Amino acid sequence: MGPSGVGKSTTAELIAARLGWPFAEADEFHPKANIEKMTKGVPLNDEDRAPWLASIRDWISREAQSGVSTVLTCSALKRSYRDILRQAGAKVRFVALEADPDIVSSRLEHRKGHYMPKSLLQSQFADFQPLEADEDGFSVPVIAPPDEVVRTILAKLGLEA
Image (cartoon, rainbow, N blue to C red; front, side, top):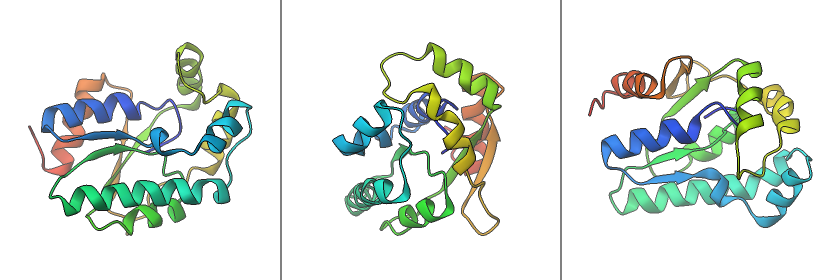
């Protein structure tokens, strides 16, 4: 979890590959209206995000009912968003990726094929609420190379692969 550009997709894809678990990108769950809004540089509000988060929650539940553990990227910027995801019929653990906003901004300048414009980055950092002590998860700085970040995450999750 974390703002756009912190490395969620890269990290999650590596974790999923190492564990042999299915991977899903939360961006794939956005309705067309949300994508159009973000493409125009308009930040999503809580009302926009509610059905998106519900569809992610429901996907997690379906996978868990099939006995499948998964890796999912999701900004999960606010506690209330994470509360919706925790309603899934599965244990949901959060890994908050931490990066300096200037570094993330630079990454977004070079990212191709994503609808999220750099202009929305500030709104994501402004909305971000760090994990609280009673939430199942932890934070990891992403200043190290991706493989090292993944090793740290897997160790903290007790899933060394």
